[in-house]
Image 1 (tube, rainbow, N blue to C red):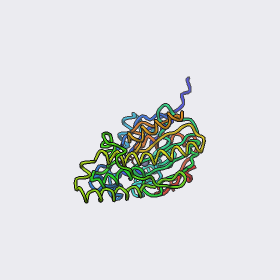
Image 2 (cartoon, rainbow, N blue to C red):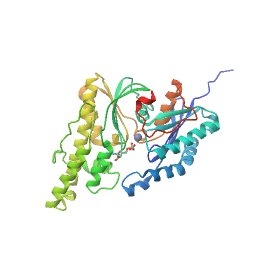
Image 3 (spheres, protein in one colour):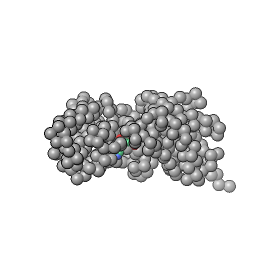
Image 4 (tube, rainbow, N blue to C red):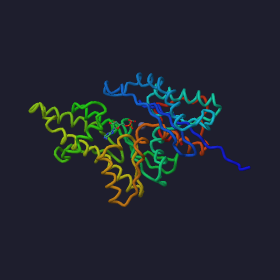
Length: 343
Ligand code: KG4
Ligand code: ZN
């Protein structure tokens, strides 16, 4: 008789912010990645934590059922349950954590805690081509902005991060100043396509090493708009494309200059980007150009694995299972969870 090895099946759960997501990973391959997005926050101009956790509660069971059905996997076949333990909104994390613990307990399978920021980076190991180590990852989303030196799956060093707003917040908050709806990042990108990025010059903040700051830029744009509107109340509407192109160009140059410095200083020849802001066309073009000019390899996960999703949690769980890193039933969510805790 042929000795067939049982497949390694990981159920991944993500609930750190406003996406409830579940994914099934079989032997390192993502078979399903189902996400319920909470559109309700758009009307408030940002995520309301209490509302987010209540909707996670409503969504989590249907989302997990849908992920299992799409992957054609039965609950009893699951080898381990991986969930986002932090960082994130406490109430939101609690829903995923409680669900994952109960599920693992009921099935009698191991529980794996995943750092959300590591998961964003490990999304690079879902599809081909996968980067080899070491590489530098720029993780940019509505909640995070980090430059990470990735030495191995669970050996990562945060070289720099934002000291105030995240890159996605910089897009969203400046979009709000321009009167655009939330989230404004994709709209700035859209209007920037036909604008002149050199029309208005916003200054680049001088922040040490590989850290970022976006709050000064936001204030600069607020004063710029207020001043011009005094002379011409239609200033924004009449110059929207050029304003958006100029804002985008500055946010992108802030990100690119730090990424370039970190990569050169550490003599690395592989760069990557993760997180929802990687959808920005200006950022993608600039990183591709940077890689080409320096003869560096450039990696970008498929978009469904860049925004918050459970596929990245499931693949991180797969590698953590192999590393033998498990949690007990006494595990708790961690709103603040530096990458270092997780090693
Ligand atoms: O990773 P993500 O989906 O959620 C988290 O915040 O974790 O990222 C969402 C962020 C929002 O700030 C959104 O405005 C921004 O990504 N974003 C963009 C674009 N698409 C999404 N920002 C600029 N240009 C885009 N095309
Ligand atoms: Zn995220």
